[in-house]
Image 1 (cartoon, rainbow, N blue to C red):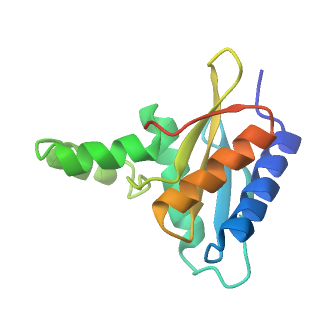
Image 2 (image 1 turned 60 degrees about the horizontal axis):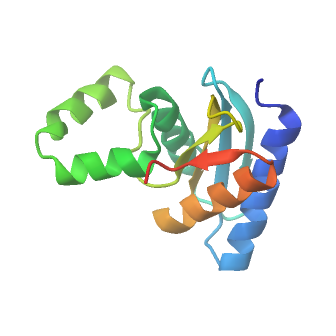
Length: 146
């Protein structure tokens, strides 16, 4: 099974709607397929000009490392020895990995990774909550790496 355009669109629409319900700052939502290719992206009016790159970095990092960006952020914060690893990872990925909550793996009912969603615009916890709402609305499972 692969992530469909309809599922990606649903994720974006519901994530943005959830952001409005939570009173979030303007959000940017990026959805990648399992190969790391952009499937859908939306940047709300008023969102910062680098929000698309941050959202993509959260999703790409989650997909590339096989864990939600919350787990990546925790590793950087809690394990000083990981700092050198993440510095190297960031260099190897040409700065594409953003270790902050808001990047969530998208899984099917059997647990297979279908892609990832990344959201940027508000505090990372709210970004992640919006991502999870979008994924659930697409009848898929979100894995934030909690």
